[in-house]
Amino acid sequence: MKKVLVMGAGQLARMMALAGAPLNLQVLAYDVNTDSVVHPVTQQQFPMTLTEAVADADVVTSEFEHIPYPVQQVCQASGKFFPNSTAIKAGGDRRQEKQLLDAAGVANAGYRIVSTEAEFQSAIAALGLPLVLKSALAGYDGKGQWRLKQAEDAAAIWADIKSFMAGADHALPQAIVAEQFIRFDREVSLVGARNAKGETVVYPLTENHHVNGVLAVSLALPGQQQLQQQAKQMFDAIAAKLDYVGVLALEFFQVGDQLLVNEIAPRVHNSGHWTQQGADTCQFENHLRAVCGLPLGSTALVRPTVMVNILGEDFVDPAVLALPSCHLHWYGKGKRAGRKMGHINISGSTVAELAARFVALCQHLPEPGFPEVAEVAAKLA
Ligand code: ATP
Ligand code: MG
Ligand code: MG
Image (cartoon, rainbow, N blue to C red; front, side):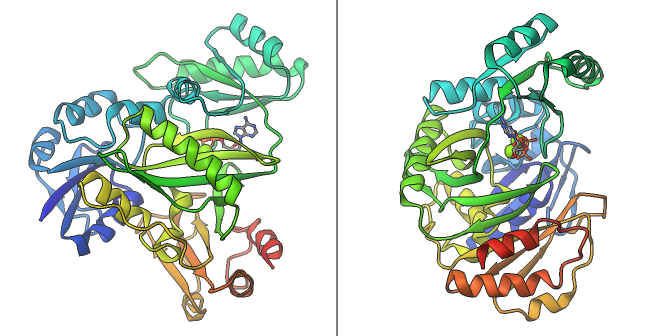
């Protein structure tokens, strides 16, 4: 039995552990918040330090990009950390991320790195308005972001950014990435895996819908040849630049038939949860296969699937399980407003069948928690 140690003890580590069991992989998690080692499903505690846990593992990996640098250093020094620390840092620091996208030659929103008011003013002059301003560090679920629509708001927003940077608890120097606002037609993502030999496999592009900056619904449907090729090329370019091993996710803005990379996630990704029911091999298994040196599994879409996030709710009517091809995945977390508590995957053998089932599912979802879901259902039908 191989032992895999995951940095981070949230739902992604939990789903890795569930996917790893049939392959005889034991997955443990290091919780960076509590400095403890736990089993991500049973929550059983293991009395080990980080150094001991890393030494004990065959492979070390990660479920999130905001791992403190000293922890990453311990992992990287072990020689068994996949993906490597450079990739994790590129996902956790938008300055490094943007430089990576440019170095890989992939299209992305025009930007300037800003740490002073003078730089803020020259970014506005160079890029024009509207602008999206993003904290370089620690951003997720749309947190640490500002929108600048008109010049007269610049001073107030800069004041806000300055106090945000002053209050941020981070060992690294703060900065903002000022980005051109992209009027996209839709948002899609590509989840794929690369192994140590440099072989890559990618899942079909997934269409994503956000509510208040948080992913609410993902759709995995067949088709989209041209876009898929474009996305795969960008995936290969970025993954090769990083000498990446594991699952990597790319988020895109689609403008006409062009893709721009919004950001990368050096890990399994929420927009890939549909693969648990909709793909030949799920993203969690493929991540483990990649980091453990096992052959990569087929990423083929076996049936159209929609994933719905359960945000801030700890109850969903169990009647949803009576719907055909409907699966509930709870994360075992305490209830908190807006928190990702679980997700639902629903599939059909055709898009039409999926649409009908999805509409039926929507009847069971708590109204205020799922504002956009019904809209997506109407679009599918
Ligand atoms: P995640 O939880 O996906 O990691 P995040 O906090 O890292 O989110 P982004 O993905 O960069 O943030 O931005 C959140 C959302 O804001 C995007 O999905 C998109 O809808 C919108 N957005 C971000 N950047 C831009 C942009 N340059 N132009 C238009 N919309 C944008
Ligand atoms: Mg992000
Ligand atoms: Mg994002």
